[in-house]
Length: 383
Image (cartoon, rainbow, N blue to C red; front, side, top):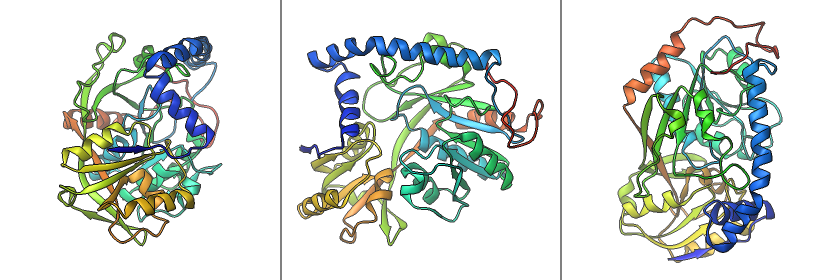
């Protein structure tokens, strides 16, 4: 298996170096860099602690809306399956009769205000405006999808459009918007706060969570159990499983059976935070991975990238990528059937118990809602 490291923009190259070398403490260089960055992590951690204290004490205030907000988040940077779990939860709540909108930041897009990405009939804006994760949701979910750098504004837009439940994708650290339920995903064993490690907050922050979910990404290792600071929190397990192949046909996504990959020789194309789980999923289906093209997370594919991939595609049965990459690669004229994405969906255990907990919060009386939607005030929100 040949691994190609394409030329990356400086920002992507630095991010990859941090993930692959520093955060994994790989070799002397990784350990030295982590030690050198530790003082910056201490400064960062002090800032996070101060910010949380300001919210907990009420000096900074959170906006609580007239409709329930359910957050799916984590402690580390990328790679724990937040968007697939948020999509799973949104679908389950919609099936129970709720009118659901998923609200997310829109990372990688250029939206500067709240933007309606989808009303359930597919994307209304392009990937450059909304970001890759929002477009994946828009192509996969029959409810609303909204991006907003200020999640409060996105949630307010959902309320004004008549949605009665908000699922907040990657919302655990976004305390400006009060939540009714915080589900926090854990995966792997990350060590250290940013920039010496991938953690955005220490494990002490899990005291704010309502429930934890340990994510098994199929790498063959035992998933991380809950840290001691999370004792007493309801605990769930999430398995990310390959379910189908996705082909883009004129921008419309068509599902194809996974069996079509069995025994095929492919090139893997990834622009995600932790691609190892993706490669492991392919190997479960006896796929022969002949070459790997590994780009940075949220990579914006260029015509030059397409030329490299297109030339390589002639040597393989398929180029196989992720849905997050497909929304950016489908603009290029690959041969019919050549470019496929692997669809991965979560299996949650025990599912009904988690949904019952969320439903209980949704049905709870909405007290202590201050002002009107659109105000910057609200009750302080901390556990």
